Length: 198
Image 1 (cartoon, rainbow, N blue to C red):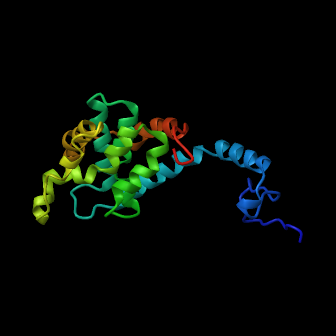
Image 2 (cartoon, rainbow, N blue to C red; image 1 turned 90 degrees about the vertical axis):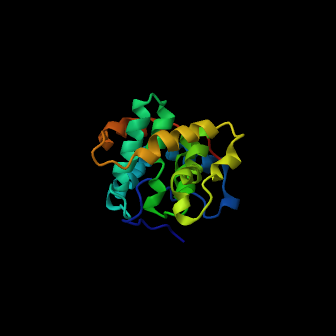
Image 3 (cartoon, rainbow, N blue to C red; image 1 turned 120 degrees about the vertical axis):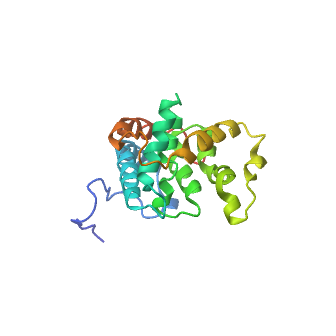
């Protein structure tokens, strides 16, 4: 059966590629790997798109979630955090664009290939660290962070949640615009630190 050209098909589709992974060849995967690397820039585009969508979400807070993320990253930068932690601070609630209850895990997995493990773990677990400040309103223990006290990333997550994240709901506080952080997003999302299950 001949392969017909599909006008809605992306330009980089290879019609000679496999239809089943278990029939794939090394040559085909080399083409896929090369094309994926060439298209890595779209990751930053999608991250920015998700961040922008947080401007539509407030869920009862005094600021929208984009402002909150920008303010958290601003605090991290002003405190002298390194690039990966500033990036993590910016992206920490991006999962709320999809689902609030498990947003920490979603956010962490989105940034995982681009940051070191302590940043990933801090973002993944930040909600229970935040619980120190508000879980009592829901009759939930406020010390859930203590189960991680022996983890190497514990102190970083404490600094993130206590000094930046939980304080970043002030519409009058200094907040760098998204454009300020765009070069950082493009820099970090352009280099994969971990992949293929690492």
